[in-house]
Length: 594
Image: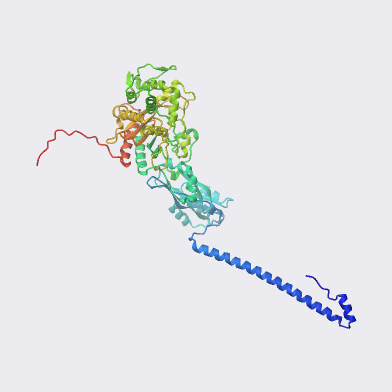
C-alpha cells in the first residue's frame, strides 16, 4: 500500500497562496488513510474466515464419510493397543482326507504374576504348589520376594486350573487370554503332525508356531491370514491310521521289539494313507529332545522317515526286475545257486547255510536265495544297478512334505564294487528308510511308474517317469505273490485279499562297525490286492523276537509278516476293497424237485 504524506508541502504552499485552511488538508489525508487501513483489515479478516470455513467443511466431510463407512462395515471387537495385539495367534486347522479334525485351536489362558501387587506372597506360593504339584513353593516364594516386577507362572491353564487360581483371590495373579494348539486324537498320527509351540508371547496373545512335522513344514500357510483359515487337508485316513497304530503297537509288544514302523501308501497317487512310528508321543505334551547320539531312542524319532536301515531281502525283487527289464533273464530262467560263491575274497552264503542248487528266477525270490540274486546282480553290473536304484529314488531323501524326511538320506557305499553290487542285491550295504522301500514297491505295483510319496490329499493318479515296463512289473508282482503262497511269507495271506510281498531279515549293525549276532531288523514289504494292486504296506520291526516256540525265532516270516497280515485284514475293508472270493466246485449235491 502506497502511503500518502499527511502534510504534502506542495499542496500546503498552494493553499496558503489561495488563502485556504491548510490544516483541513491534513485532516482529510488522515481520514483517507484510516479508511484504507480499515479496508485492508476487513479483507484480511474475510480471507481468514473463508479459509477457516473451508477447513471446517473438509473436516466435517471426512468425519461424515468415515461414519458412513463404519456404518456399512461388520462389527468387530476392538483391538488392544498393547504390543501383544500385533501377534498373529490364529492358526488354520489340519484335517484328514475325510475332513476330520487332526489339529485345531482352543481358547485358553496364561497365568502371570506382578509380585509388587501381591498381598500375601507366602499364601500364594502355597496355593500355587497345591494347584500345580510340579511347582516348588520355596522357588515361587523366592521369585515373588525378589526384585522382579513380572514373571510367568504358567503358559497354559485348563479351565479347572484357572478357576482354582481365581479362587486364591490375590490381585497379583493375573490371567492373559491366548490360543493354544490342540490335538484331539492324542498320540494318533503324532509323527506326521509333529507339534506346535509358542513363538512371540505377550500377556494378551501368543504366537502359535509349528515345531515339527507338517505343522512346521506348512507353518507359513497355516498362519497366513490371506488363506482365510482354510484347513490343510492331509492324505491320512484317521480311521485307518488308528487301526494300523493299534495293530503295530500290539505286534511290537508281543514280539518284544525295540521299535516299529509302518507305511501304507496308495501305489497310484503316492498318498500316504497311514504312517506310524513306535514308540510315539502325545503332541499335546511334546517331550523334550534327547541328546543327538541317542536320538534314535527318542519317541520323537520317526523311524518311517528318519530311520535308515539295511532292509534285507526286500531288495531282491529290484534285482530280478532289472534283469527282466534288460532281457537277461525270464521268470523261468534257471540260475545255479550252489556254493561256494566268492566275490573279491568274500564268501556269499545262504540263510542257515542252505544250498538250493539250481533255481528258477521265480524260485530265487520265493526261497530268498542270496547267491541267486548275487549272480544275477553280477550279470546286471554295478553301474547299471546304481542307475536303476537311483531311478527308484533310493539315493536321495524322499520329497514327502514332513520336515523330518530331509534327515532320511540313504547310505550307499563310497565305492560301488562288484562285491557291493552282490550284497546290495539282497539288501546289505545300502540303507534306506521304510518310506523309500514303500515308494519303490509302488513302482512295481502301479505298472512301472516312479511315485513320489506325499502327505497331501491328491485328486488322482500322479505317475512319474517309467522305470520298468508293464510286463516286468506284472511279472514281479506274480513272483511276490508266490512268496506269500509258497515261500517265506506264508503267514501273510489274508482271506479274501490276495497279498504279494517279500520278507527281509537284516542283521543289525553295531555303532562301531560289524553286526550283532542276535539282533535283527525285520521288514515285510507287501502289495495288495495282488490281482489288481492298489496299495503298498511296509512293516519294519527293530530287534523283534518271537518266543512262543521252543526256540526264539527272529526272521521276518515269524515277526513282521504276521503283523502286516493283521494290518491288511483290518484296513482292507476300510479302504473300500471288496474281498475276492474264489469260486468253488460244488459236489455231491442232488437237485430235488418240488
